[in-house]
Image (cartoon, rainbow, N blue to C red; front, side):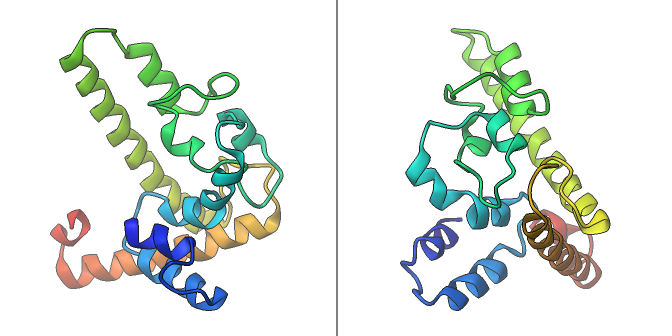
Length: 172
């Protein structure tokens, strides 16, 4: 993640095409949606930090996310606006959190993060098959085309790893 973060910021390569290629290739093993976040949401985050809610992102009709970091911090920091019905991190985490119950809260954090990552992994396969990211119904075609192309390539790479390395290759 750190290397890809630096790629997006232009610290590794400055050429736009080289950055795009590095982002695509570096994100391929990931099943967590980091490509989408880094390509469509991280740079706008610096300009719009703290101004967007989860609802803003899920209902947006822009190609870029208003503040992509909102997708990853909803479970650990207050955001503008209210929670969003589809967000496990916002709803489950905040509903189950108990002030002062460190062990319980660690378990809640672990469960919600693991479940959310599993949901993202499944969603990538849905996007690869359907050619559209249904979590973002108002986004323009360009957004869905990028999601489709990346998830199809990523799924093919994951299938190749499973074929060549067996089941444990997935966990790596």
